[in-house]
Length: 165
Image (tube, rainbow, N blue to C red; front, side, top):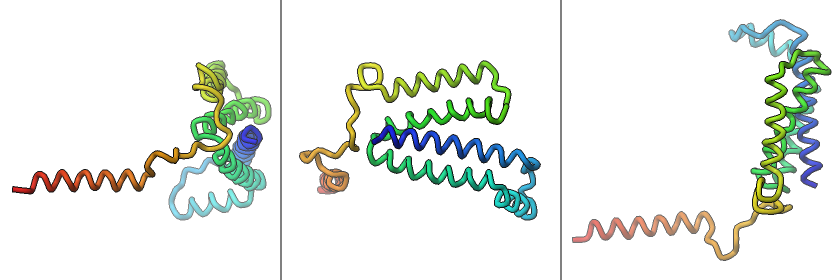
């Protein structure tokens, strides 16, 4: 299930990026941050279908990421969603017809390798298969609140020792 969440998050995020980039490129650059400039920018943004659709895609990506975080560890979830940078670059080149220099493609390859190293089970990417559910605290280990209370007790006893005659 976690890989379905990864795919939804990556595709929805990339669709949001492409739609917002296409919608925002239809107007002038936003460079006036005074009250009237901000109002013009807001008016421009809310009247562009692509930007609004991009926002909907971002919302879908956000909720999918929440689902992913409920099924996978953060150290797996976030690197896996970095694949959206790969899709964004491909979409920038072939959908938005941007020039993508070789150095940027080399960066895309590095991102792919980094994702592979971060999520791959085994010696290069971790100590075995990732658990399918978030890691729960062991029953025999004290909770965060218990550890904090123990620290306070230790500090109190040290203070008593220092202040006793």
